[in-house]
Image 1 (cartoon, rainbow, N blue to C red):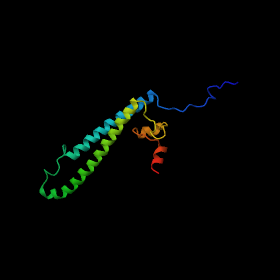
Image 2: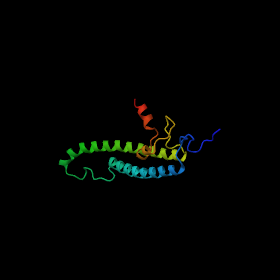
Image 3: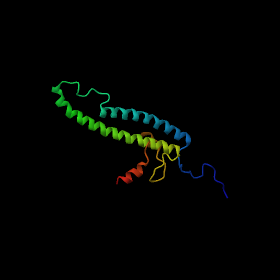
Image 4: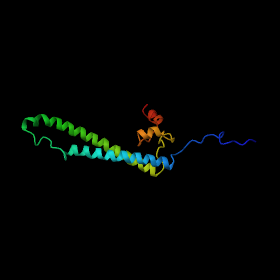
Length: 136
């Protein structure tokens, strides 16, 4: 009977990221979360006009032209703010998954999502494979 050396042993597939790797992802997410919250506050301010002069302080001739653009801008800012808020929620959920040590595991396949993908989309819950299958 021959004993397998470590080189011959089958590679065990990783089932989760190490605590050190999770810490790296946590720092990345916290950085993105800080920026996302700043952007969200700015967009919210644009919708509420808390930090702008708007058309109230311009002459009446410009008021008619500005109202249409202002309404459109408010609507766009509102949509962007809603998307940003959802992004913030997704990042916060990713932090919870880090604490639970389930971060980076595809919710469809149960396999690890590649680090490269998580660095680009840190709140991802699907591997590219699962995402492509879902979009078919």
